[in-house]
Structure formats: C-alpha cells, structure tokens
Amino acid sequence: MWELMFDNNLFDRHHKKANTAVALTVFAVGRYLEAYLKTFLTSAEEHFMLGLPVTYFVFTDLPEKVPNIKLAPHRNIQVVKVEKYSRWQDISMMRMKIISEVIDTVLQHNFTYVFCFDVDQIFKARFGSEALGESVALLHAHYYKLPKYRFTYDRNPKSKACMTEGDYYYHAAIFGGTCEKVKALADYCYVNIMEDKLNDVEALWHDESHLNKYFWLNKPTKLLSPEYCWDNFISDTTDILIKRLVWAPKDYEKLRAG
Image (cartoon, rainbow, N blue to C red):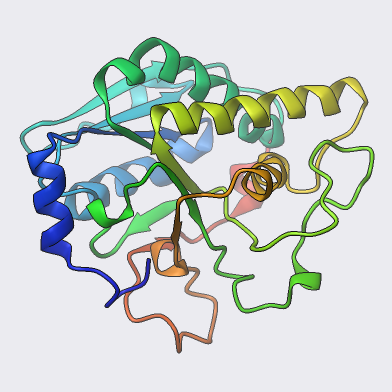
C-alpha cells in the first residue's frame, strides 16, 4: 500500500458499514514506558484508524505509570501487567507468546483485526483502514531498495529462523491481520524461538528473524510500504510521498541498561 494507490473514503465506508473493531497491542516495558508510551498513544489518537472503534492493549511491568490519555468516543485503553525480563532481547521475543495468549482469551471474541506495534514510534499522518487485511506485513525502510543478497536474514543453519532465500525483508515493528492469522504468526515465532533456546541458539534479529521466516512460508495478503514506518535518518526519500509513522529518536544505552 502506497500513497495514491487507494481511496481513503472507500476503505473507511466499507469498514464502518462492517462494524470493524481494531485492537492495537504495544509493549512498554522498563524505561520504554516513560520514554515513548505517551507520545505513541497521543499520536495514535490523532492518526490511527480514525472513525473506527479501537482498543489499545498496553503490556507493561509498570501499570501504575501508564499515562492518562484523552480518548475519542469508542476508543479505550486496557493495561495488562507483564513480567520484565532482564534482557531486552527476551522482552522482544516473549511478546509473541503474550500476543497469542491475549488473542485466545480476549481479542478473538471482540475484535475484527489486531495490529502489533513497537512503542518507540510516532504517528505523523493517516494510518487508516486501508492498512487492514487478513495478514499484514511491512517492508523495512532500510532494506526495501537493496538487492536481496544484502537482506539480513538469519543464515545460521542451527536456527529455526535460518533463510537461504526470500522475497522481501519485513520489519517486525508492525504486523497485523485477523485474530486467527496474527495468532498463527505469533505461535509460529514463539515455538521456533523456544526450540532455538533449547538448542542454545538465538536468531540474528530475534523475533524479527522468525517473523521473516514465517512470511516467507506464509505470504501476507497485504504489504505496507515504508511510508507506514519510516526512519528519518534515511536521506533518500524519493519514493516517500507521506510519512505515516516514524521511528522515534533512540538512546539504546540508557533504554537497554540494567
């Protein structure tokens, strides 16, 4: 999905008529909550799926610190307490297990679609119903113009994420779809992450490596352009007519310490 490829109003009318409801999951653990969550949520209220019922599921080890955000009608926040793992890599990988569980217990009964986001991002423009689909993946802004041999797939044959070929390089900062399809992706990634752990292996880019393997074997039905998750440090913007979501500035030394 690129700008100029679709009619906003057509998609919006369809999903309003269908009574589409969207769940958004986001993990804000440790220092990431204070650094990013408020900006993520307030910007989502300005740009994410406007006009549709949306519930933000915030997974955090610090529920008492989740900021109060003014929400539009038919939009809600649910805070779910989760364990804080000692390594950020484990937080990143274990989210797949948690996403699967919440789909099983809550989301599949109440929502048409679920989107999963990293918290260190800021909505800047419409991120609307045109992005909804059965299985939704995102082209990584740093790789979509590169030749395939430069894609950073996991090449370790001992890992379940190992790939010797592929079509695109997908960014794990955003993925979505129907509850059934997102659960299938999350279960696949979790099972393979745990099998790697049993074999004392860790995929190169953690859950993103497993996500790329999943989408190689199970093609997404909708592919979002890098407009939907752009890095402003990339100088070549010739393809980018609109920046719908951008990476927030990061200070990994502080965020991932301790």
